[in-house]
Length: 75
Image (cartoon, rainbow, N blue to C red; front, side, top):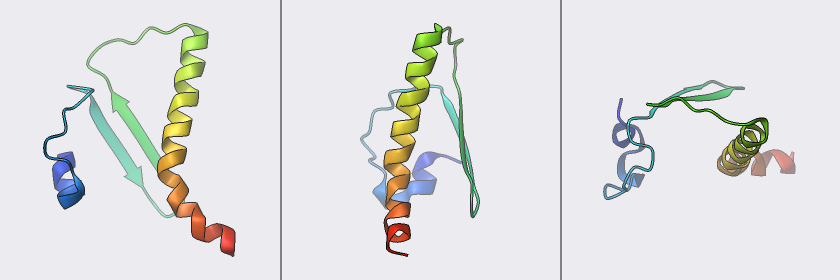
Protein backbone atom coordinates (compact mmCIF):
# COMPACT_ATOMS: atom_id res chain seq x y z
CA UNK A 1 0.00 0.00 0.00
CA UNK A 2 1.30 3.47 -0.79
CA UNK A 3 1.80 6.03 1.96
CA UNK A 4 -0.68 8.38 0.26
CA UNK A 5 -3.36 5.68 0.61
CA UNK A 6 -2.67 5.33 4.32
CA UNK A 7 -2.29 8.98 5.31
CA UNK A 8 -4.96 10.36 3.01
CA UNK A 9 -5.59 14.09 3.25
CA UNK A 10 -2.71 14.72 5.68
CA UNK A 11 -0.13 13.52 3.15
CA UNK A 12 1.77 16.27 1.41
CA UNK A 13 1.20 15.50 -2.25
CA UNK A 14 4.12 17.73 -3.30
CA UNK A 15 6.50 16.07 -0.82
CA UNK A 16 9.77 14.99 -2.44
CA UNK A 17 10.88 11.62 -1.08
CA UNK A 18 14.29 11.77 0.61
CA UNK A 19 14.69 7.97 0.54
CA UNK A 20 13.83 6.87 -3.01
CA UNK A 21 13.37 3.12 -3.48
CA UNK A 22 13.41 2.45 0.28
CA UNK A 23 10.58 0.13 1.30
CA UNK A 24 9.00 0.90 4.66
CA UNK A 25 7.03 -1.70 6.59
CA UNK A 26 5.18 -1.31 9.86
CA UNK A 27 3.16 -3.44 12.22
CA UNK A 28 1.02 -1.79 14.87
CA UNK A 29 -0.85 -3.58 17.64
CA UNK A 30 -2.20 -2.59 21.06
CA UNK A 31 1.20 -2.66 22.79
CA UNK A 32 3.75 -2.80 19.97
CA UNK A 33 4.88 -0.57 17.14
CA UNK A 34 7.41 -2.09 14.74
CA UNK A 35 9.02 -0.37 11.80
CA UNK A 36 11.55 -1.63 9.31
CA UNK A 37 13.13 -0.16 6.21
CA UNK A 38 14.63 -2.14 3.36
CA UNK A 39 17.19 0.07 1.67
CA UNK A 40 18.05 -0.15 -2.04
CA UNK A 41 21.77 -0.30 -1.18
CA UNK A 42 24.10 -1.84 1.37
CA UNK A 43 24.75 0.28 4.42
CA UNK A 44 28.23 -0.01 5.91
CA UNK A 45 28.67 1.84 9.19
CA UNK A 46 31.36 2.07 11.81
CA UNK A 47 30.34 1.20 15.36
CA UNK A 48 30.05 4.92 16.17
CA UNK A 49 27.96 5.61 13.05
CA UNK A 50 25.69 2.66 13.90
CA UNK A 51 25.27 3.94 17.47
CA UNK A 52 24.53 7.45 16.19
CA UNK A 53 21.97 6.09 13.71
CA UNK A 54 20.29 4.07 16.45
CA UNK A 55 20.08 7.16 18.67
CA UNK A 56 18.73 9.31 15.82
CA UNK A 57 16.06 6.70 15.03
CA UNK A 58 15.13 6.44 18.69
CA UNK A 59 14.62 10.19 19.00
CA UNK A 60 12.68 10.38 15.71
CA UNK A 61 10.27 7.63 16.74
CA UNK A 62 10.03 8.99 20.28
CA UNK A 63 8.96 12.37 18.90
CA UNK A 64 6.19 10.76 16.85
CA UNK A 65 4.97 8.47 19.63
CA UNK A 66 5.08 11.15 22.35
CA UNK A 67 1.53 12.26 21.54
CA UNK A 68 0.28 8.82 22.61
CA UNK A 69 1.85 9.23 26.04
CA UNK A 70 0.40 12.65 26.94
CA UNK A 71 -2.86 11.24 28.29
CA UNK A 72 -0.97 8.41 30.02
CA UNK A 73 0.80 10.90 32.33
CA UNK A 74 -2.57 12.16 33.65
CA UNK A 75 -3.58 8.67 34.87
